[in-house]
Length: 128
Image (cartoon, rainbow, N blue to C red; front, side):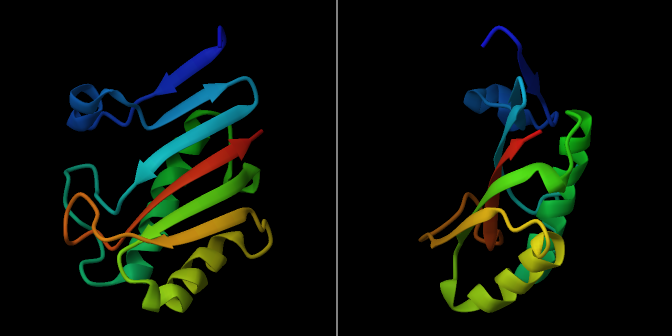
């Protein structure tokens, strides 16, 4: 991957864990798992999964713009949720952004995320 570009979010965890927000190689972009944390590390949408979904997608959208991409370029989303019974609420929030784009999507219930107040983590694959 000689044309690889790493895009950092500036989060302290990137250097501790050894990852970055996004990697772009040619026309492909991979977005790391993203939670509803603002730039100061505060949780957005406490106890509100739909708000967390919307915040996460908007957060990723800003990072995609740095790499010359938009949500229209997203081909896959993965949603890791802590309560699958809220699938419809999660799906509707996801649909606000992707109803016309229709990427392939996976939603999986997980036992826990890195903090108990995170209700969802998302990652995306993108082709420009």
